Length: 280
Image 1 (cartoon, rainbow, N blue to C red):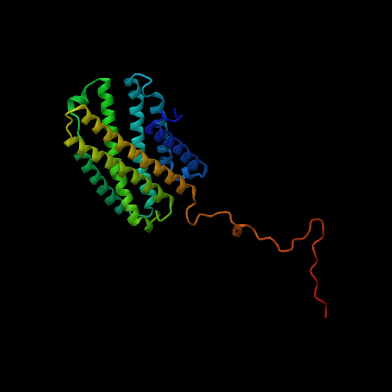
Image 2: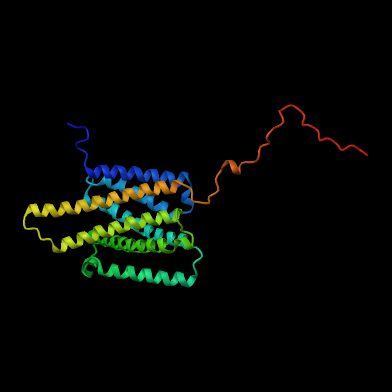
């Protein structure tokens, strides 16, 4: 038997993603990018922690106990990600007038609220108000999903604005801000496409046999894997772009070093005296 025959694609993707996140954290800390992108760094830490929790605890403890840990952590991560969108917008459009900020924020939130209202089901009030642990976990999970959807829409909108107008402000080509926003918007767009495609399939699909049901489940799993591959590529993109200094960043080069005399005076020998002019 091949030594790796028991390893599934899900395990390979998990391992590569977790390792890539650790490398990204090394870059953020080692290159001191965290000083400018604090919330983004915190978001990466929480994402790595979620992956580790899901790997170590899922299936190894009662489901209700697992979700009591995992769902609050996921909700905290989505709230931090909302702060990341704000952080990236502030970094990308330094110098924008207050009126432009207000108008842009209202427009972006209006679009996000419209998508949030129309996309996906909302639970009944009786389900939300039920005073049980399962109801509370369901409410927290719904809040996490809705905030994540809003984050994805806002991130895609921010990515479009950065690509169109970022060069006029502080998110020009090869800037770290633009690199992060491009990665975030790519990942968000992939998640929106995954959820949208599956929602269309789920509305029209009717499984008459077990084989048809298994086929639909396989489609859902393949969509999830494709989304994970996209995010893995995004992490690699962040590692490469954040490791490289931005254009115009001061660096220690030969030109920046102090000038060295062409013929230095040997150590221990007196310096040559300057000849005095002869008196008339």
